[in-house]
Each structure stands twice: as structure tokens, then as C-alpha cells.
Length: 357
Image 1 (cartoon, rainbow, N blue to C red):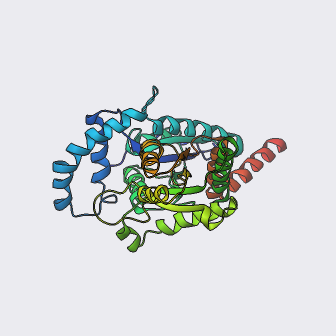
Image 2: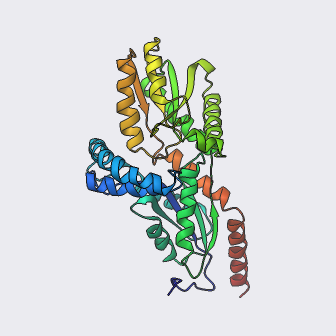
Image 3: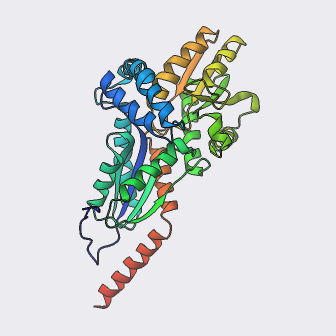
């Protein structure tokens, strides 16, 4: 059978809303084998590496994976907790908190599922969990505030691929970006202010975003401008002067130029030029992961201190903080507009019919 059958949908039940919370992914274990499997899925994605397959795959399997997987496994071991991968553990908490909040806010039955673009729980597993609840409307929320083809675009591809095999496809809305969404910016600003209240301000505040190749931006990715938008709006909300903050890009790969300035080089330059204290915030990461807990909190701290800096602090991601959950709930409400109003009218009509009978 080409199309997969789904559960029957009761005719008189309110239209259920399914929300798919989607993040990048994580290996199943901090071992070379598990990391290699995860990296292979990630780096095989043509949205992530836009090279001809005949050129890329020999490099991937012959050079990159054999060397990178063991090194990355050691890094994952340094951040792995008793409950597992930080990204997955935080994602599970985000899912539960968002579902609880939405069930209290929305006039329709709602279920939230967590999925990872690469690794587990898979996009298919997340969507199947929602389909089991007889959803008729699906809102996909990739946890990437700034749009990039390699992240948000790839998430869309994965969701569409699964839905293409369903007999009954629900109404679908896809949140492509939210770089200037006020509740998201408010949550970030409050996170930074709380850190200042607990630890004091540093001489400089750095907004570090994940990098993408410059070629991707030149071909139409709005990512750089959306990162710039987020950083500028945050700086204004925090009442920072231009000399108090900067924006940079981390996690580059390969020899081609990526978006600049590079986070590691900027921190070295600051340390060498007499900047004594730095705090780093990563507004593009909805949950702490290898790129924040190891690369930013540890590796780049070492670069700054070795260059002459004296104090370095990483400000944690929003994770499952109440302000972040409220922001995500507001985002769902905003993008579900129309669906919710129809549900409200249906509920009012049902109540009137019952009262008249």
C-alpha cells in the first residue's frame, strides 16, 4: 500500500491541533559509532552540504567521518548527563511544558510532539504520535528563530516527505522564522538581565550565532540579516551602546568562507586588545547543546583567556524557562490564528444548541 492509513476521525469532535516541535538532533549515545551515524545523516543532507554527491560522499566517508566521529564523541562525553543528551533532555522538558501551557490556553484539544531532524525521536515518529490523536490541523514549529535553508528548509523537507505518504494529510502551517517576535526577544532580554543581576555586567556582550557558508547567504538565505535583526533589537532592549556588544558566527566547517566575524577569532582579538571581561549569549539556539556547552562555554572561553582576557561567562540558552515556554505558546497562538477562532465559534454554537435543547 502506497499511502498509510490513519485513525478514523470522529465527525462531531472538535478539530484537534497537533504541534510538532522540531530541533536539529543529537546522537543516541556519546560513542564513535553513534556519533558517526548521526553525523552521516546530518552531512548527507543536500541542504547542509551543497556539493555534488560524487564529490562530497568520498570526502565524507573517506576523510571526514573516520576522523571527526571519534573527536566529536569525546566532546559529547564531556557534556552528556545521566539522563542523556542535553539537547534531547531539554527538548523533552520543552515539549511537556509547552503542551501543558497550550492545553490551558487554547479552545481545542492540543498535543505537542518532539522530533529531531537527524537522530531520535525522528520526524516520522513525532508526526505518527500526533496522527494517533486524529489531528486534523498540524502546526510545525522548528526551533530555529532565524531562517536558513540548512536548518528550517531541511525541516520542511523532512515533514513534507513523511506527509507525502499519508492518505489523509491534515491542514498544515509551517513557522519559517521568528527573529523579531516580541515574546522571544523579551525572553532573551530577561535571561540576560537575570544573568547580570546574578553575576554583574561584563565589558562586552557577544551574540554568537551558528554560521553558514557565505555562498548560502549570497544565494538568498536571509539568515545573516535575521541574525542581525535579532541582535540589534536585543541590544536596543538592553539599552546597549554600539561599543558594548557585537555579533559573530561560530561552528564553521571546511575551508570555504563562512559568515563573519568568526566568534573564536573575535574573542581572541578582544582578549589581546585589552578587553578584560566578556559574556556570550547564543540567541539562535533554543536549547543548550554541544555547540553551546562545549564550543562556546569551554573552547571559546579558553581562547579568550589565553589571549589575555580575565573573565568569561556563557549565558545559558532559553531552554525550558517559563519565559521561553510563554514565547513558544504565543508563537503557536499567533500562527494558529483562524483555526482557533473557528474552534471558539464552534464551541459557542455547541453550547447554545445544548442550552436550547
